[in-house]
Length: 279
Image (cartoon, rainbow, N blue to C red; front, side, top):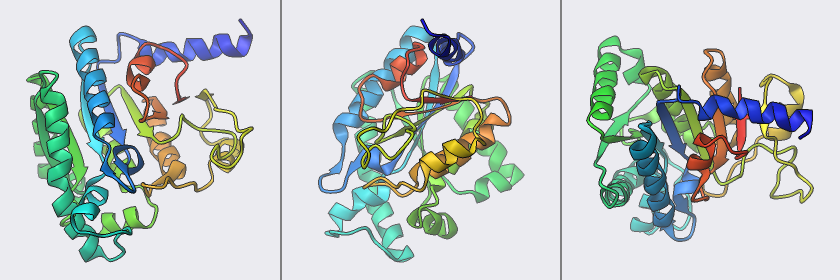
């Protein structure tokens, strides 16, 4: 085993350690939805299978932060393109949120787990009273074995929805805030890519996955990420690096991995070389 591979294996022990008891999993729109077909229900079912298995076998509890309401609502509204105005985005979110939650509920209940819906805005994290109430609700749900499904409250959040539409990755930031709120041990960002790459893998066949990032401020990492945005999502890899930068300051590791794999989460928790681990 080479020194680099050995070091990477030791790093993976951090996220496979018994110390990891509480995990936030964030799914982007490009993972949860298909631009043409709407919701990717097989992906949601695979997520439910993995989380239910890890919860039952290892006692790890999960909070899911999900995008996808606007993308799911487009089909119901008969829109062929992504809505551009705030009003249309909020209307699509209101329509799509019911389909999104129904898909999560069906998937988890098939595995014997109930889910709960929490719609939050960034204002909820700035008000002490609302912050404490949301935190108490999340921790109570986890203690009862319920899977909280958190999403941005797009029907009332105007600034966040502008950020999301402009590539700001508001839900990546929301996942960071939720991770801090509940004192989670790990944040997993699921996307339509297998992790961070040296180049855009959709354009460069010779792009190589970066297994471990030890210095998130390394200029080569930032230049490799650029501003790539997925076909169905809006955040891109840059917003995921920003999320990881916030958490790395407080010692919380982040893994960016494929949400289209049926094994990503179990492989991450099992210490396997999956995705990109940001220390």
